[in-house]
Image 1 (spheres, rainbow, N blue to C red):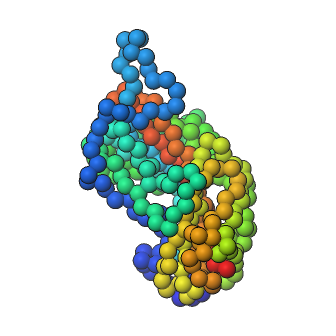
Image 2 (cartoon, one colour):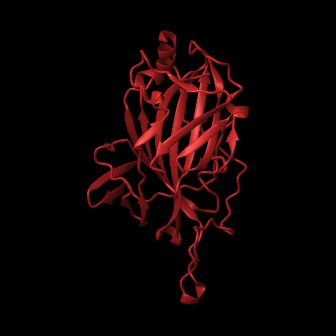
Image 3 (tube, helix red, strand yellow):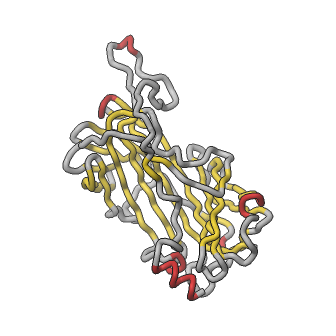
Length: 295
């Protein structure tokens, strides 16, 4: 166990990532002739108002809760990040890296769409009647903050984002009342890595479910001493409270391997904005990280 804790704390090569870092797709072609639209009817040209078209930005609110921070080289149990990027309208999605519902994979790599960044002010404000914060630029059209406190974050609440170019509203996500197997949430390194991930099929359950969200489970397998990552198995399904990673994906790992387990709720929506008379893609992720072993 000492070797695993030491290695996870000392380098990203054996650290546990939520997913493979997305790579910029230099071959992607920007195109607004076939814009990504939400469900429902677009604006009618008969009103004299140009139809709303294209996606002008991406907003990502991510809460990550780690059961045993020391087990995976984390410094804190809960971390909340808010990121927003703005660009000229495109027809692509920022979340194409997610597998389709019902799909599993042993290789998870995402691609960012090609964009032309757009500055929307010296900062942006995010607020609802009970909570507010500010995100500052870290690049052209890219705003970020990690100064969001878990005790202040409003669940299932409407937040309005104000920029110099316009505004929009997103609905935050929520967490879980329980997750099974419970052993994956052990908090002490001395008895963590106790939840069995069966090679014949690893099953998980959680509540509450969320019919407007997707659910992704990723099991990253390591050698029994934690010195080498063997790979990972990832499945995406509806957020209905139950999922099994089939044997053909998790059974490739040897019995006795250690596992880091990532369970995450993804709520992805397109919301209207007056920025370019277009849409913003919003992505709420609530992630829980636990530990286990392959059996």
